[in-house]
Image 1 (tube, rainbow over the protein chains, first blue to last red):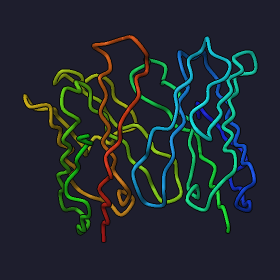
Image 2 (tube, chains in turn blue, green; image 1 turned 135 degrees about the horizontal axis):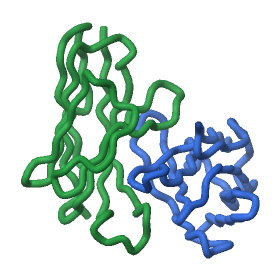
Image 3 (cartoon, one colour; image 1 turned 180 degrees about the vertical axis):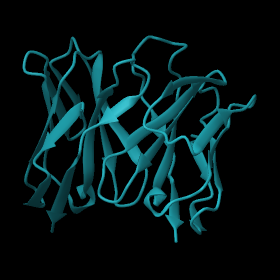
Length: 111
Length: 118
């Protein structure tokens, strides 16, 4: 079964608006990571939040983690057209030896 | 900074042919992972290696095999290719299992190899 599920599947916003993507997972975690992928390209690591952290910032990114609800959110503030990409959350598989990715949210930012 | 290198970037094969994908991890990274991403799908874990030994196995078909060499580069060998094998194949590396400081460790992905099976 999928470790990470994301919603929405697709999100279209205007430049300058904020974008929020949510991720839910099923098992206990050590950390949760967010990745970005431009169409047909490699995945780029954005941010890692540990299980004992509730919120983390990196530039225009803000990630929250609620382990009681087994959910995380990624907020991109003041979005730009260049933020257009797919965003995936990822957690560890049961053995803790590989990442399991969610289905991803496709973000489109129009200028 | 050096990144993960994958070759070739694009590969076109016929059904039932074989293919070999190569991955060169970031220097000093000891763990290599392979993922497969079908069109519109999320990446699926195939197999990983730590210090040249197979670490874990995911949804890798028996037709595929992989290894990590003494210089830490890895190769994914795919035989009897099927149409459904057409996908992006990503390699990622991390300073992972040896450190155990932050697990799972941040994985750094290569640009991928786009395999098309005709």
